[in-house]
Image (cartoon, rainbow, N blue to C red):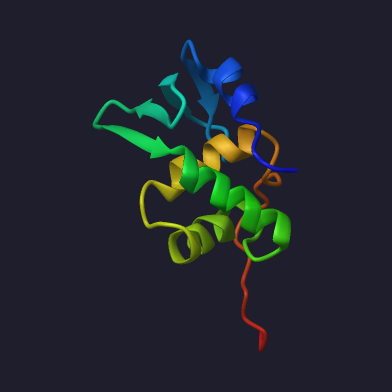
Length: 111
């Protein structure tokens, strides 16, 4: 299922506090427009590009990027862009694209 930007705008357009994947903190979304999601933490602000999130979701759906939040962050940095991948994971988890965090998962095929 592709990323529905109308839903993103409806859900986060007026701002929102979304739980982090681990659930102990929140990420503040300050707004959304046609091409960006705006986020803020106590230390910094950032803009997430729609095209990057859509590409991440497409790669999740194709099985290229993992649905596990921790592995997703690594994959997103490699296959999409190395820009606020953890924040993207929080948003895509909140939207239902990523699984629940179950702790560390190894990709080691020899382990």
